[in-house]
Length: 113
Image (spheres, rainbow, N blue to C red):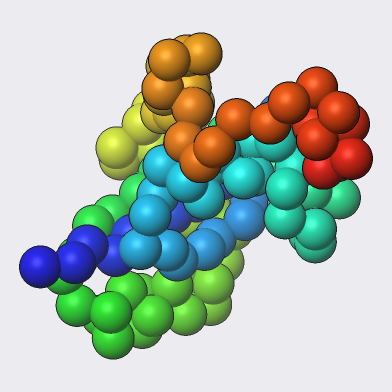
């Protein structure tokens, strides 16, 4: 059975990004390392502050759309219901031993960014 995640990332200035993925760890890694161009990268939104898990992809898509339609105040209340201090929930996920994907040689890493 697959899992799907609806997640909220925040910047240090509380700007939010809402997304959906089937691999939360990989997606957060991509955001933290600016591997995905777009809004979150442009505004340095890379702290995981909230997520939900479901086994139904349609429910995840519907929930993502629902959250994106909410006013900022309501999104903040949702985050604070699970994470009152707005901690980065993924802060310990990426030790050197636990980095997802493959590693790059120094030359590849230089060309990858």
